[in-house]
Image 1 (cartoon, helix red, strand yellow):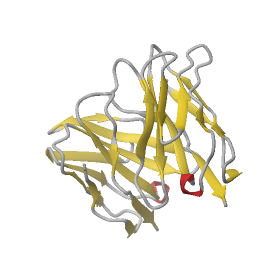
Image 2 (image 1 turned 180 degrees about the horizontal axis):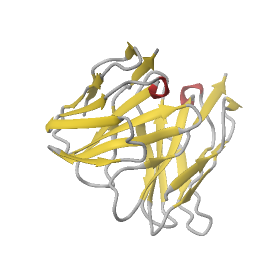
Image 3 (image 1 turned 135 degrees about the vertical axis):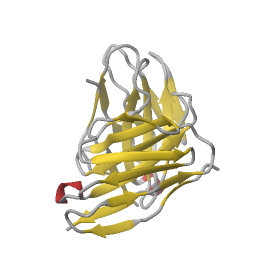
Image 4 (image 1 turned 60 degrees about the vertical axis):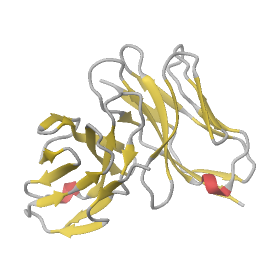
Length: 113
Length: 113
């Protein structure tokens, strides 16, 4: 079945450091890929998405590139802020069949001033 | 902005009780979902619904049922609560377009004693 694997957290960085959160997936066909973010005490919200190979999703300084050859969708940001502290979830949706998203286990990011 | 409201933020129940978790969305979305969120496991899909009175099992439906009598409301039912159902429950909704984003509620933290 479909699955999403994320690096374990927590990831602790200093402000202005470079961020990478790894995400790899297993799915048949050509899934769409997503990053969702959950700030403390809030519901998950979409951060960015990519729908086909080599697409780059971007939002709020975060970027992720859909790499079909490595089945990866790593999240990056050049300079993190304290306000980026949150839990980040990678997710996929198959191109056929089930309408629901399959999520990874989440990676907690803590940014220290 | 879309609002997804879950009826309780925290809930404490006893083993064997029947538990109802309610979710209401205000944007006429066709699709609604119930996930549970557990540390290290991420979000796992319990049930989803793509129309009134329509439902499909997700990855972990055992011990749960759902009801969707009206488009805006999607209820999750624990027929006989057990301690292994202690978890954060997240409701989400989306228009009937698979690449559109999910809107999540803030979650219900259920403790079964």
